[in-house]
Image (cartoon, rainbow, N blue to C red):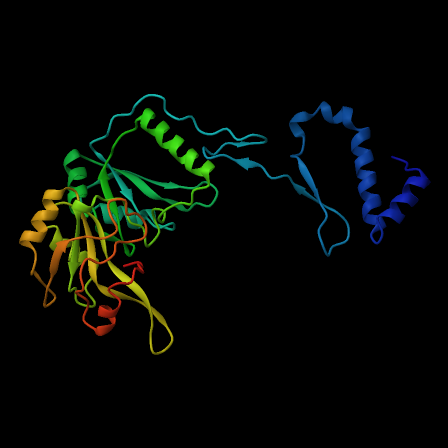
Length: 336
């Protein structure tokens, strides 16, 4: 039994009013732990996890709660400084059976993505990159197919395809280059230290645009209202490998007060090479889609460094209503 001097008890009751009994009990517990420290040291394997003392507003007394434990990217739990996963020091060659899938939404479902990719062949392994803290997708995944042919088919047929109301990137695995990774890291650190604001929107955002040289971009106008991006993509794939693209839309207030994303009547298509872009302009201009002849020309938008803000239109061809024609010069993108 631990005896507390009367002076200590009275001082505690006066200082910690209006909850003297709660603080008195806390002092008894602390004194008891101090007196039994020798016995606890002999049983360290049974020691309780660290606790933190909280003073909860609106509640009388103090609250003891377990101290927060830091969870690392690799899944290990430690206290103190974080220890990140080891970065590979040796180059990793590209895997011909693996593809990179980008511009995925935060809450992508693994089963839905696997079903989308299975159209090209058998999926052996699918690794969706997620944040440990939230479980949200980082915007990309790596998929391994059963053969090189199936991986190649995925790049040819699924790149720029419509998944989860957005266009997705599907590219061959590029492997890992430590020197290139270090250069990119230094560039990011320099930009962060300079306070330079980030340009564009991150991958996975509905209005994300990857970088693409101007010579590989094509403007597709006179698209009928209600036409899906997948329909446009399938037509444009007749000229070569489509990498990315979408129909640009704008938020419009309807008569009932609701907001809808209405097509602007044109799309921007990214090709894998300039030859495919030139072929699209020469051979696909005037192609009929849903009763309309498509107007195809080289995109003369924001330049080669365009990323995130969406290209400006390269002509005045609009949709199937005056509203779309009036909005041709706006730059408001939205999910397809």
